[in-house]
Image 1 (cartoon, helix red, strand yellow):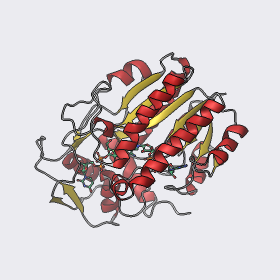
Image 2: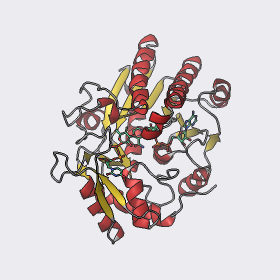
Image 3: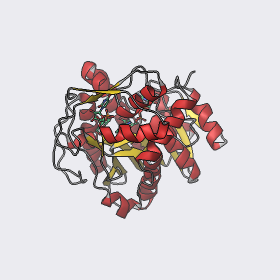
Image 4: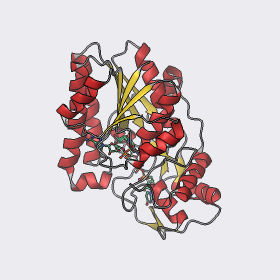
Length: 340
Ligand code: NAD
Ligand code: UFG
């Protein structure tokens, strides 16, 4: 059985990916320092998968602690999700972001070289395309200028990993550029569980729908789009998770040293459309007001998905209504999120 080390596997996307890997017959080991997730996720995964996963509470920047993980398990592939991801926070504490995100990846890559682990999937982001208006983004679209330190960590790590792969011809690296992951597992047992007041649209809408927050502010309704609000390519987190399984399958058979794939649906949804879809899912109105634009937002972002479809055999199957109804189920079953 092929073993996948999932760093950050206790987090939002990582935990959903663990389920899909398990379903596909991969053996999973998780490393997470709980910086942005609760240990309760492991109990929920046990309920869903009927087994307890090997879990290491370690900081991926700590090479000695991580060496123990590589020593105790025969790892074939790594999916590196571990990282800090709050855009606004990255502007306030940039050094923490550069240190954590870059150090953790370099540490894991060093250990992969030491233990001859060949396959690496890295969580990148559509944010590397910068402020370009040339949509849809293809994998060949030029990388842009990022608007915040979080985005730069992804941009820099893509380059670091290209250099790493060039120097280590046996290594296979897959850079996955996610668009906007939303939604939750169909069980309602795991989902996105942000600390404090959410920054992202879907967690915010969920909390307004659930009554914990009063009103959503829509950031700008004067964009050059069909209804004036920004367009994003929302992708169900379970589809995204499936994309990772396809990426690992691909790395096991390819000779390409570095591959890059967009993971999105190829469809754009405006903020107003997202609110309307959520209202349909929860059955009541979501209170919202229109405010000024948020700094750093682009009007339109969506993926060209042909490459992932052709090479990975990946195509998203859930639509915006599925994303909203799964979010709503997660919200109603866990109104306060997970507790430790
Ligand atoms: P998340 O915060 O829910 O999960 C990340 C996990 O990594 C958390 O459980 C956290 O405790 C852990 N972690 C952080 N630093 C660590 C370290 N040094 N050592 C060990 N564990 C550490 O975030 P997510 O939404 O699941 O995102 C996963 C990855 O995908 C991140 O790298 C993120 O930047 C990237 N990404 C996310 C989005 C998104 O919108 N959610 C979009 C594009 C890319
Ligand atoms: N929005 C609101 N009100 C809110 C929150 C968001 O109107 O309270 C709007 C935003 O202005 C944007 C849209 O909803 O138009 C989506 O915003 P999100 O914050 O949910 O997502 P972003 O597209 O800004 O950011 C996401 C990830 C980042 C990643 C970026 C690019 O959160 O990590 O995509 O890939 F860098």
